[in-house]
Image (cartoon, rainbow, N blue to C red):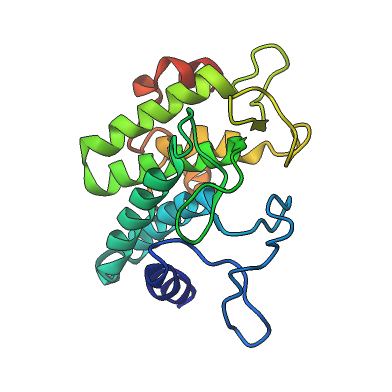
Length: 225
């Protein structure tokens, strides 16, 4: 019911942009943090990375529900993904994903956050698994190659958590490297089935039972995983 309300109803009515802020009466607050657009936890506008994340989560839900899954889950996943790529990938003329957009889909915060790219990779893998379509596999490899070129920190380890609009290390939204789970999860999602949930799948020895086994990793992914 949460997915239906937030995505099938609310995001669908907002051109597949996810509304994240509501007042106490449940009414949309689309101007929330308009004076602090790059807020660390609650940025203004639509967040590209959350569209990718929800595109993937809907597919996990669909896989769990199996034959009882409503048709809108795949439709919404495709739409969230397509809109996030269209409005996020190179939207300001540079390489990579902008962080946020306004409600007309125009870039607002142009910093490149590592977790946005990580979620795009995971969503690409999930859609490739759910649909079998090569277009999602191509995006998956394209996004991993982008990570290898710009985000992998080959000197200090892990990923650069934030880059500026020219893809240089930056700290306007996040300083340091406080978040390891997105980078780790991104190496696991493509190698696991859509169901059961990641922790259960790992427990049950299902690693490399997903769309992309380790033998099929790109050079950039294999280098860091």
